[in-house]
Image 1 (tube, rainbow, N blue to C red):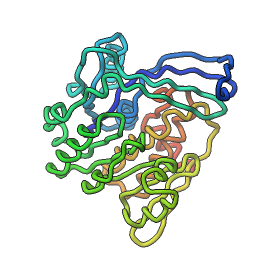
Image 2 (cartoon, helix red, strand yellow; image 1 turned 135 degrees about the horizontal axis):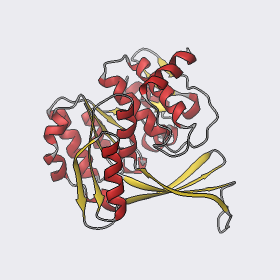
Image 3 (spheres, rainbow, N blue to C red; image 1 turned 180 degrees about the vertical axis):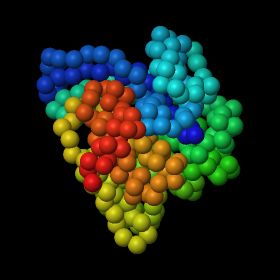
Image 4 (cartoon, one colour; image 1 turned 120 degrees about the vertical axis):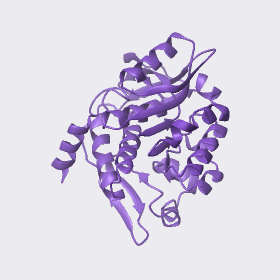
Amino acid sequence: MITVVGSINMDLVVGAERFPKQGETVLGNLHTTVPGGKGANQAVAAVRLGSKVGMIGAVGTDPFGDELAANLENEGIDVSGVKRVEGPSGIANILLSEGDNRIIVVPGANHELAPEDIDKGESIIASSDLVVLQLEIPIPAVLRTLEIARRNRIPVILNPAPADGFIDEFLQYEPILTPNESEAAIIFGENWERALEAHPNRLIVTLGRDGARYYDGKQHVRVPGIRVKAVDTTGAGDTFNGALAVALAEKMPLEDAIRFANAAASLSVEQFGAQGGMPKRGETLKRLQKAK
């Protein structure tokens, strides 16, 4: 089983032919609401790829909270660790254009997730094969999760996004880190390639359509991506992390696990919505086989 500790948001999506310049107004061509949040997205990706998944997080008492909790349950995710807090749920304002996205997250209930909530979920964490974390929840909750996982000898994937929430204290827990290039530059500096050698097999930098890089202890390894025509890239990174978690929980070698994650991510961008394009296991294996 995989336990995801993280954010649960409603995505408010707007599309336009191009991004507006500062101070400019442009006409849009799309508006919709879809369930999201990096934590929830990664949980959905993992469960669709065949893993049992439990979620620890928080939603509000607003209608979005009802919809978000129901969506996770409908996916088959255990939501016994998701608490309801008075007030609004988290939202993400997502602008889609030019094959890319720009996102503003308003945390809402996510920022009410406290260390004591993680303590209540210790039995869930302790029974896991792997834990997945991001940084859209308060840092004290992230640290408590890392502490509990280490105490119970459970490996952790920490997806350090948003990267401005990263603190060096995380490194002492030796999680597998999965920043993208921009996040790696924020955390480790512009010469982040050197950090790969300092964290062999534990720092995986995702490169979008170009795949991912890591250092295996002897040499730098780049695992190529699978290039496709992207419709919506919003959930690609979350799909990668959910798929990587599934593969590592199944004890796949790291390079094979990254190839599996790249295949899943390539499928996710071919459809609209962070969760909308997240693939099932069969189609991911088919894409992986075709890419060989």
